[in-house]
Image (tube, rainbow, N blue to C red):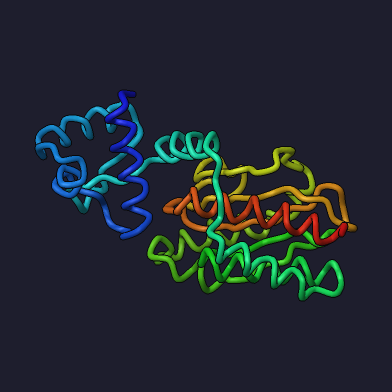
Length: 233
């Protein structure tokens, strides 16, 4: 992938996350100050390589799972920081928890408010969830089959986390990378943290693959780190 193609892919991912509609060549031509023909040529190559795709209802393009994975890998190599206001909100809500369970739930609820996704965390052998209305209010989940796939993922998430126990501080599972609910069109972003319940507790969010990944990844990673520090202060 050329440097310009990489920048175009990044712009498509970020613009699509913002507006929830396919991104056209005219908009990108304005962003990069080149002709629409040049953008169309670059988009055609990105599509040929499988990084973007064209929904049948539009001439614009959206990222594929492969495109999201490339973007997320690039983001993971950069130092991501949550906005200062978000860090203050997390710190305040974690501090309100007088017992570990309340601290964890408060942190999940804050992630829900900050990301507008579904928030999840393991508390012992149970999975705490908050923000279902956020998830099913997204335009991606307007048909019953999609909702069924998401429900299947949620039903199996806690036992999968317990069995698989992802070992990275931050893990991102995009679309078909999810071992359960592979057709759910969701991305799971989770952070491992140590708690009185387990050395491998998890907190994170579940939302559509159309995500503001850099911001959400930073928030989830910070939440796990801040929660662990608070629990063992």
